[in-house]
Amino acid sequence: MNIHRHIPNAITCLNLLAGCAATIAAIEYHDLAVAAGFIILAAGFDFFDGMAARILNAKSSIGADLDSLADVVSFGVAPAMCLYAALEAVVEPSYRFATYGVFLLAAFAALRLAKFNNDTRQTTSFIGLPVPANALFWIAYIDLFSLDSSPIITGLPLLVLTLALVFLFSYLMISELPMLALKIRSLSWRGNEWRYILVIASAVFIAVWGIGGFSPAIVLYLLMAIATKRIDRERK
View: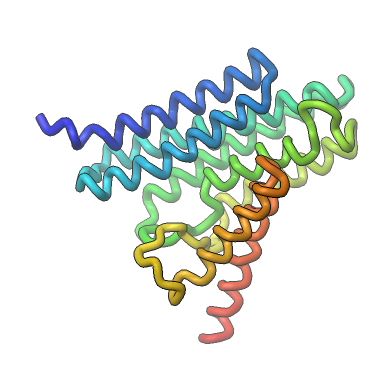
């Protein structure tokens, strides 16, 4: 029995457990800061399980399926639960039924991952917004608008804005928009320009706004994808 081949799957399970903990923190304890911390931790595990699989030469179809199942929980269900808990506290009871719309994020995360698992084009890059990026946007959105403490906007305006963004990000997850993968195979600037710009800008955003900095970082990520697609189209 090669124990080292199970290390990536063990890390993936930690991703899943972190997602479960985030859900409990949001719904049971209404502590969205702790929930956000668990989602960020899950994103770390999601990064390192793939790295471990490559280093240990332990890639497998079971590992890929397990990774997607964990991602549905950590980056689909957990952020949707956080958003639901945040809105429930600041939206009037007469509009509260509409807050269930946030769970479209979980459904479309599952669709995006099913599509990813069966799309041979997505080996070195992504097509559609990756689910970890979607999750990071939403925990930052909650933080930026202070939805867990003293919200900047409340009631119907907040609900309309949030649901509009939910519909947009649900679409982006299953869209045909080519997205940059952050796998840097060499440290040279050439060929990694967009990656380095994104990493540096994201670090600045997070330094200024804390967790809230993930939101403008993801918006920049999307704008880069749109820009590179347009540049590639003009070159052709």
